Image (cartoon, rainbow, N blue to C red; front, side, top):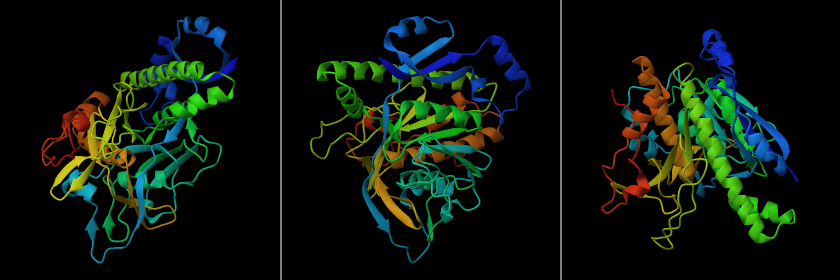
Length: 394
């Protein structure tokens, strides 16, 4: 049976040397990282021979991806006096001397409402990977983008890195979701266009994959087994992709991959109902993000936030840009991720000014910025990683 597969291939050393010698850091083909992405329909029986090819580093079946759905979506009224969203204060962005100026951010999500006042003055480069066309029919991508680099809206500061001048908007999730192939292609596109930080609030739709296989005629046991194979292969593929991006950092632009941990935990039903970080965030080379809520003067893990994340960010009752104008409040690791992506942009600006911007250096500074000060007594370190991400203060 022919199935769609993603194939990562390495370039020859000669080709890489050509890229290193003649390409400029902000105008690189994605292949400059040393890998190409191909999507082909392949007979399962041909996979062993394909994987033995010396230039093939990863092969994985295309599997469905879904939005990390937010909770508690509510419109926000305009405050009487100027205000700062609580998440902006929690990460210290309101007191940081850095704004993200000169840093290119990519948001791989449901698209963006480019006409929203939050994005006035920002150069938005849009690319549709769903076949639906640019724009945001959901509002999730608009909200996430607003948290990363949105300008003030209705007397409220919503953006962590509101000095970002250029953003890449990859629409990878549409009305029917998306696929791992579209995500990998979007990551490639973002690196090709100079992204320093890539923010993703999405995950593998494992139940959807099992259902698709059952609908094709497989019995439940075989469908589940085949889905697990695809799950594992895609995690490995994302890891290889991250590995090549990191390897290219010393020669080309720095690119950091940040992804939501997922919202499948249910601590409000049972304190032990904790689900581990989901792909792609669980893949090595990605910074996974948990969600924190504010309780008076303390912070605590959100009941829905998956456990085992590397770092955490504000993710409960987050005010940001609403599709069509105004503000809307949402909760989820989807909301925490753009806070951390915005903080990464601030650190990238600082490190670039020091002449020390590399993927390893940026990752280290971002992860080390996490603090557990103010966490509720008895919190589980495994839930919050290094803690609440913090913006550079000098």
